[in-house]
Length: 220
Image (cartoon, rainbow, N blue to C red):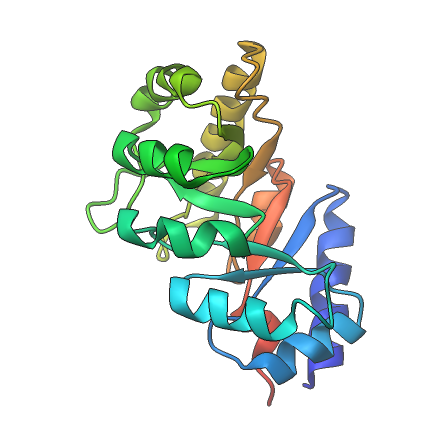
């Protein structure tokens, strides 16, 4: 299928769940031409996982498409913060105080951050343990340039539907728990969860941002 068919398929599958959510098109494997085609179809939110690639694409497209919203979705090295911040609207991978400190130092205004949570406790995944999330967010009071807009997780790639439901439900509950604290710096209204292989399940569990790459940009 072509890009238009892919886009229609993904958006229809999202609508079918009945859960309003923002589609983040993950374009880390494709060039600017594909981003422009998706833009023409109405897509505005795009995600990249490498600092150098994101900044290059943002620089190339910002004049022509100033309303593109860029998301950094990869693990963020502290030394890359100064490159990423000016180019992005959302960072999906805040997972340690040293990173928070650097974002706070480099930001000129509030930075929209998702705290990354390793719900399934996988050794090969970034993110903090669920029990550490609230104490971590409470510490972020000391960093006025950080706004915790929500939580993010990546589910296990190999998992049953039931296991996926449980992972996403746990993140959503944790999001609600943070929201209930009514912290000024952490409204935590959003749940960033779900990718090409599991976004429909994530939406059923209350995702408000889904990050879809393969199903969207793979053209046969």
